[in-house]
Image (tube, rainbow, N blue to C red; front, side):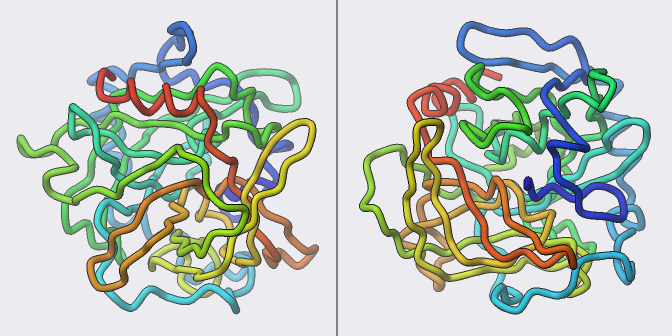
Length: 301
């Protein structure tokens, strides 16, 4: 199941969220689907996400149990990493994780596709995702670099929505805050699309909305990730138990704890959960050529 946190429960996005984002009319631009957010909607997003609303899940007894493998990241939040907030209409707040990546605009964050692709409800109606903001360096309600509203989103046209684990990636263009681009104030993580060995020593980050911290703290797992391919998709898999809210979090190779820098080769997409809401493993889609093209054009959004 996908690991996006919605309201006061963790849900399988195949049931709760699906495949179409309609903050404003979405349009296919060749090999990608782009959504532009109006200035009025960006202002509404900033007004919606007060510090109190960002912390609304703290202490909720219905959240999944605390992680046992994942640990609170005790060092400063790594460059570019932060928490992504949104609302799935009609009024269900949620969060994911995202990371600022290098771009010509200095305004781009990278996350999972299902974090900004709302999909269809059980009546095949598009689920609108609104109030999208990114808070780099988020820590227990603090926004040290500011709150950045999204001005547009895009995913590859090869991504068919939350029912799919293939190409579950998205880019988000963010408005500057106070005249400052997000990459300049929060830093970035490198990203790569080249061939990798079948096992990669990996450091994963995410803001899991579990009883451990209710999404208020950055957690990490340091585990080997293995590549698995079948006739439908190729994924990276690892034994990490970060709960919902960790979706879109970076999988970093060659990570240096001292500098907080590494290279993204995947992001958290899906996970296996027990009936008690405990995550037993995570997977991330292997980057493909369509996703590489998506990233290379992100600076134009």
